[in-house]
Length: 144
Length: 170
Image (cartoon, rainbow over all chains, first blue to last red; front, side, top):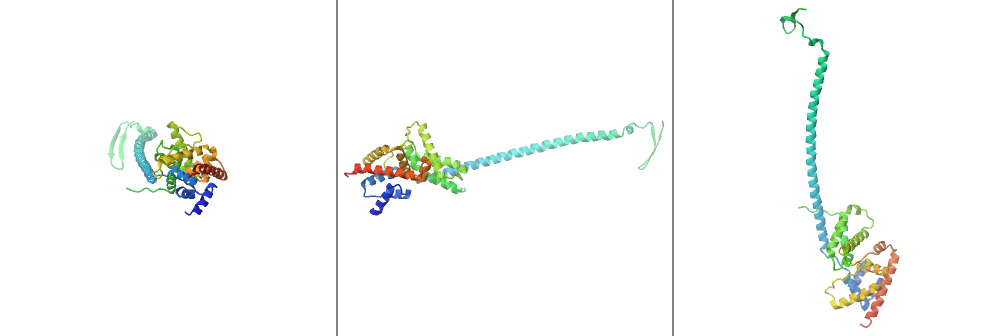
């Protein structure tokens, strides 16, 4: 950087109008102005730079976090699918047994209803004597 | 093995480490490892990336998070916190400068920095050491950008005059 350019930049700096990039040039460059040389030297040392490996470390840390989350999610998915299958199995078996029970009760009720329709037929006829019986007819005698 | 993809937002959050590092290093000084602190802060931001997706001032938010983190850390360790929140802690000199000269320069400069009005000093430290943008300083100090420039200009001219006085006979 020429001395003229440097002086212009310093004037801009003192007016508070330099950009961060221009300041970087000033701080790391050289100038004939003794007091500014010292000041910029001080700032150059003082403005700490992030070490180059920091970003790589951050990237690695973020990937590790993601992997941890992914594993956690996979674990949760497998646990919840296991739980879901257990629930289904239990639900189906309960449903099956209860439907069977119900159908027994229904059958009993139906049977009772059917029987109640024929009260007379329940009384066995007195003293029947079968004379002839085939597929079509039954001939019998009855004594009252 | 598979490689994970990083989103644009994640890249942005990671790149903030360069921006907040100078401030964290200055605030923690020799007391703490600035690198570890920056990593903690960035991971914090990463954890909140969903909320930060549409944040209008991501770097401003990052600076605030970093500053609060450092203050908490200093409080926890019972370390002295400067009343202005901008303590000028000693940093080790680089090999480029002679240790004695560096120490002398440090002493002189920091004495004059301390003598500046608090608002000028704050703006100057944020700009010349922490490397903040004017808009970021304006947000943090609740001042207008033009006012920040004026304060900074005054502080820079003041420091220059003091240093001219000292180095006059060199």
